[in-house]
Image 1 (tube, rainbow, N blue to C red):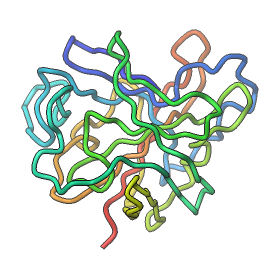
Image 2: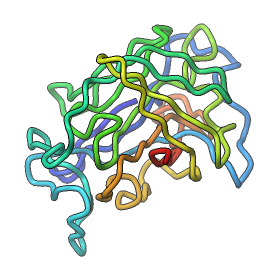
Image 3: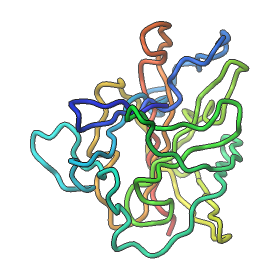
Length: 226
């Protein structure tokens, strides 16, 4: 999972798409049905010159991306950092770790086989107003990783994030989409929202050794439960 600088103002997320060392043949998840696309590959990233979420800028290559270092939580109710991610439908029960940016502008990622999901600390926390982004690996050199079954999520499935204050933030899956790494719908992912929303991201598509690994990203869109 990496955010790579683009045009010096964008960072693309390749969630868990880096080639795991000695990846086994089981590393490539089966193709997902069109109604439930599989893993993600490149996501707009916050940068100092990027517009705030929802600030639709015609022609901008990264519309709606929170700026790195800016207060993307401004105006939100106070929410503690997330501690645990539970998605019963796909048997995900993982601890959560905050991830930021590497010195080269790439998004940090949880360690392989750590049973951790990374939440992007430059944006909203899960439960705060706006799009909270959570990414995890789809596989590793040892086989399946946290988001191996992410492609199986369907509308109506529930996602729960427990924060460090013991407060549970519940979300309901609305839809999912599979996109080429270089053609992500930035506005859909990073666009402003008056309610808490969640974006779950991992890799999908064909695995091409020497060409960035997985070629696509899967993005699951969820909205706060009412």
